[in-house]
Length: 342
Length: 182
Image 1 (cartoon, rainbow over the protein chains, first blue to last red):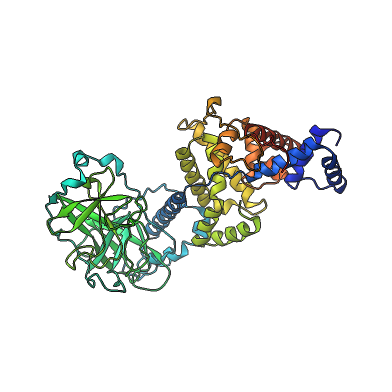
Image 2 (cartoon, rainbow over the protein chains, first blue to last red):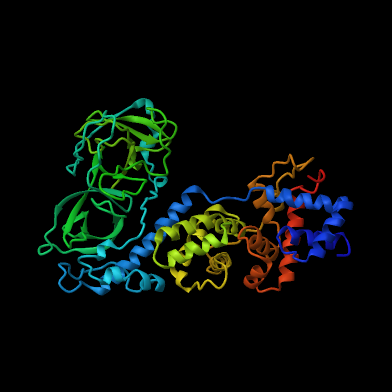
């Protein structure tokens, strides 16, 4: 170390723990004790460390987790479809898979995890463990239409009709302890309610992807193969661990002649869990929906609906907790979000 | 940046099929990946896309990671490659900084200065790319000079010089060299 320029270079290295020689370290310290310029540079290094670096947006980790889990689920579903049913299992080869045959299956994943599928798709494949936290980031901004011009003061009453979809059979609101939610699952951001078994002898099923749920068990959530039937494209059919198939219908309501499906911003990892508002919308802190929502009006059943500030109900709307037992959101202690179906 | 030993434990768990460990690994290292991409592209939305692609790549190739190098070194290599590939594919541009965007530098005693993360990011984008890369490797990913040199393909001494040069410039741009020692 010969001059201040070299000394500053050494200081930077010392700052990074890259100056190992004791004599070099001593030389730097001795120099700084007598050189105001280098001492100042040492302080500036510390000050630079004190400037905060950018951090990733909070929602980014969730989005990446969803993408990674989806990639894993797809890989595992491909392997499952390729493996076919295990001998003696009640399952069958799933026809018409939409999964790309050339989709990449990570080698490490096949080494460690695929045994759970090849061991018998009809029985145990549906219990492949992964964490798929499906949260749908809906493209709401592009869907604003002429209704956005309406003000909150107009408070229109909109045609409402129970959608004929499954209605939660839960306790009425107002109880101190919220009732347990029905048999909900979450698939691509939409909430579905468990219904009847599906007779695979008379149904053609197409592989769609997977749903992560523990169903009614207390075990960790697992990936369950999701299928659709051309005769009922709005519903999802799950291949259950026992080899049976169960239909899950979308939880819907209508507003203004359109059908909207219940969404959830949190994973529904097992039956009994309630959907919550999507993550793009801040949880209201007041009964009027503020600060993120505003009251738009009521439907024909008298249920108030709330929209995002500056948006129209056609882009989706929220319903406050405390609806009547006949309402699709009944029993849910949380605000709910309803997105338009295509 | 996450502690290397903790990363090693999570990597081992993830490689054995523990997806929760993988997610923890991702969350622990996300800021570094995002930070590098933000400095590379200068655009938060593109940085988010890049971070997402990085961790999808990591997920797909985790089995290739043999643990001979630190996970942070491997992750930095993946991150750098993803950013470069995005530019090569022509879909993204690495945005150079316009000098008029430079922040007003703090004045007076820098112990009282309030240089923000945004100031730092803007200042980092004024650096020469090779200096910025070396600085990111060390400051964001916690790589040693030797590790950074192995990824960047340059001698250790070159990394040392580049990091030093980056720091000097950042200190000047942010006005941290004014006002005396802390």
